[in-house]
Image 1 (cartoon, rainbow, N blue to C red):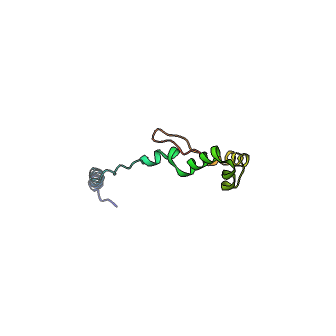
Image 2: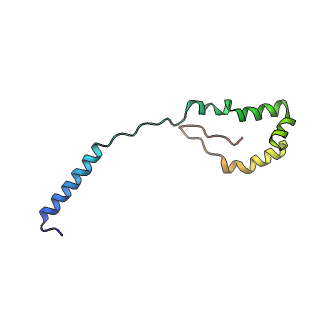
Image 3: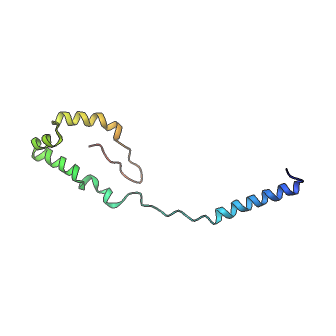
Length: 99
């Protein structure tokens, strides 16, 4: 393929220069927000979690009708799905809890 060593080394040099040039002209990635502020407050301000908490304290019967489960059934179901849906907290953000 190559006629002499000079052709091979010059092709290698051209390839290396092309790679270096491509790396130098690469645009930096735009930084993204890891967690939006409103998502960070979801434990306290989400409608679903607040509704379940308030119904459980103030009107357990309505909570049972709304979820179609009594408290024991709800807790049992929560225990079954928690390992499947629960994630771990990281340095960047807290994970969403199962309950």
